[in-house]
Amino acid sequence: MRATDSALLDTSIVVDHLRRKSPSIGERFEETTTLYLPVTALGELLYGAYKSAFEAKGLKQIEDFVQLCAILMPDERTAHRGRISADLTRLGRPIPQNDIWIAAIGLQHDLPLATRDRHFSLVSGLTLLDW
Figure 1 (cartoon, one colour):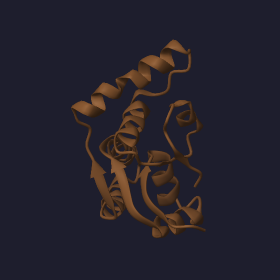
Figure 2 (tube, helix red, strand yellow):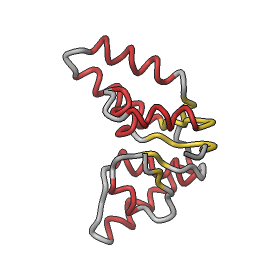
Figure 3 (cartoon, helix red, strand yellow):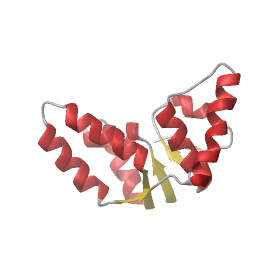
Figure 4 (cartoon, one colour):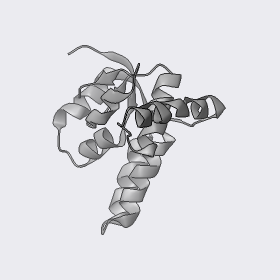
């Protein structure tokens, strides 16, 4: 396997890692110089923990995991990438709004996205990592 300089993490990859669904994800994390987590994905992870029957355990897992990542916040430049949503809607292929924000941050920072959600392939110019 080749090393990756940086990767933006989608919620689906982090959830699979935390649930230990795929040991190879941890290996990929170790091979990656910098892991970025969009604040939108962090919000989705926290939502999942708060609604879980095992809230404290989930929150602790997320707190520990976040220490491995640089958190990326949206800004005005990210917001202008709302065009992604408009373009996909015009094509009749809308994706969840949170995923628009995640894709926009990936495009803005020229970061490949590690995800299990195939609908990200609809976003023009976004590089996907098959983890």
